[in-house]
Length: 123
Image (cartoon, rainbow, N blue to C red; front, side, top):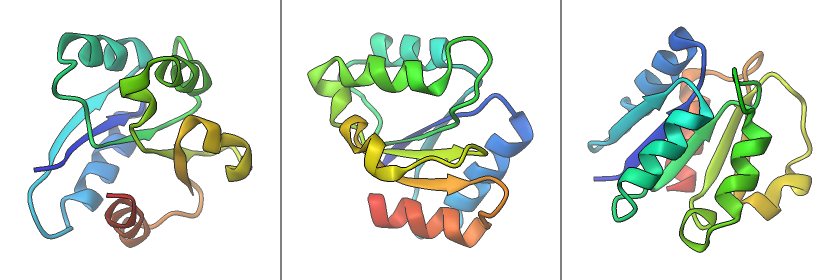
């Protein structure tokens, strides 16, 4: 059963992303975190149960998504976790592949089916 972290400070947006993922066949364990600190704490608490995928907002309260990307990339185990950015910032994917960013979903354009298809493709 794939484990997915959604790191998003907008509870409504996080729930929409989770619902889109749950339209896919199969069962997923989805954990939602409202900030980078909570997500890093969860990663530290269960190093043997790392997520198979992280969906990450960049503009978070507290440490932002760029800070989290840098932190994840500094450890061998977490550096291998694929990342999908879910953001309102228009970013260049080629600049972010060093952080294992696999795709970028733009909040002003994404649809539930696009979220599900992107997650399915990355997993």
